[in-house]
Length: 440
Image 1 (cartoon, helix red, strand yellow):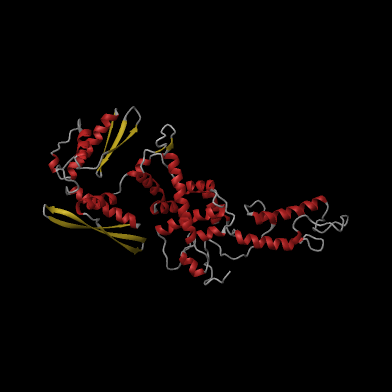
Image 2 (image 1 turned 180 degrees about the horizontal axis):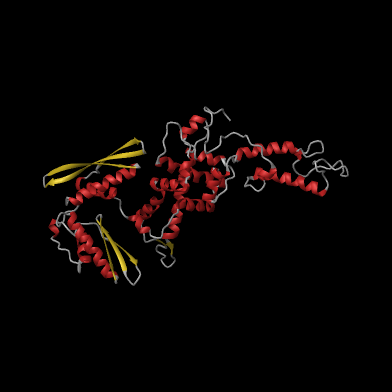
């Protein structure tokens, strides 16, 4: 191995990639090893059995009562001058173990044990683990391998496994429908949105912080922790498991499930549009282009943050268009952008600019609210309303409704009454967003 550019940092969570431990048979026995390691242990076990059988003496030399022409059936390279050369064998064992195992310095803070317990997987080559947590900047400074190729591998595996989990739970293969037996109540776009919820940078970064994985990353001297580095570490760890396990898909699915906690008990909650999506859609519809988002990275005493400057157009009167500016901050680029979009949406709603219902001539009615809301959709004033029901205790139903970025809810003894309440609340809020009533 080439010499490192710098001395390995003191108190580093990961040990330097140089062999400095002397391993014994007792150390290696019972560990998860590859074929080469298992073969080394089997050779030692073979000669130990010969000692028990009396063919060899306690010092592993040939017993004087044994035929001098006797030769071992395995491990011939270690049979020198009628003796099993334990020194040579242990040197080769140490060389092998130092290639694949990291030394344990403090068992209470050993990153290998921490990750093993977290993902329920024991690495054969533990050096893959250190590489998975080595940023490119650190790798250049210390002339060691970095995580970039493992990130690529992990990203591909992650997409495939999460897709498999989603498809298994949200689709069916029904022979009763020969015209299309593979069915789901979700379309391609919705399935993609559900998957994105579990593989997005924000979610992966949050899980990295929650599990402690974020604390194991090795950064270069000029690099700061970020959601991007947390996401990369999660992907690289998955890539390391793939490489170490020989793409054992059962192992990989278990590891990803433990890392991400993919829960699909309420998949509809992942389908709600973000304010960023809603504002973009509104702006595209009215002005044929997207609003302008300008994002800058900030460095504060509290860590890394981002500032988003949002500029969007607003109608002043029939023939004139103005503009509005909003500045927000967030821990990540996407959070800063989403907060800016939310404030933009809130501004449009509060000024009655979000939707134009002046010519709809609508007076909200609780009794006819469901039909009124459907009529607004059919006439092109709004998007199609989406309802979601949940059964409550005491024979009650809860209904939520979302339409054109406005939501409402209702709770009643029957589904229809709950749906009417939800639709009515949406109607009133749409009127407010159109500037046609001031209070709900």
